[in-house]
Image 1 (spheres, rainbow, N blue to C red):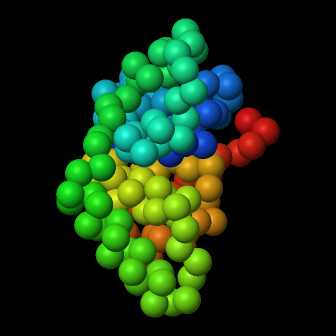
Image 2: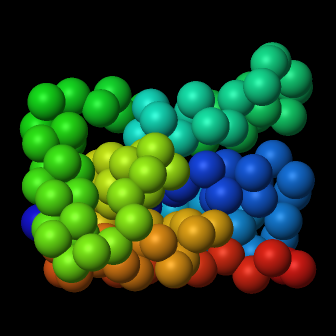
Length: 136
C-alpha cells in the first residue's frame, strides 16, 4: 500500500489561506519526508493565476496527472454510485479522480468535501479521510 498524503482542492485553499491546522499537517509531512500528492484536477479547480502564495503552496507537493489507471478507477466508482441511484455530476467526477489518486499514491486524504468523499470511500477502503476544520 502507498504511504503519504493526498490533498484535494479544499486543502489547497486552506494552505493558500494559511489555515494553521492544514499547515501543521503539511509541515509534519514535509519534516517526516512523507510524500504529498495532488491530482491534476485539483490544480484546475484551485489555480486562478500565479501569486507568490500559490507558488509557495505549489512547491509542497507532487502533481499526479489523471492517467488511464486513475480514470478507470474513478469511472468504476462512479458507475457503482450511479447504480445506487446517487447523483453523479462533474464535481463528483473530480472527487472520484482525487480519491482514486489517494488510493494509489497517498492514502491519507485531506478534504474540504468530506460528505462526497465519504460516498466514494466505500470503493476505496484503503483511503483514510480527514475533513478540514473551516475555522482552523
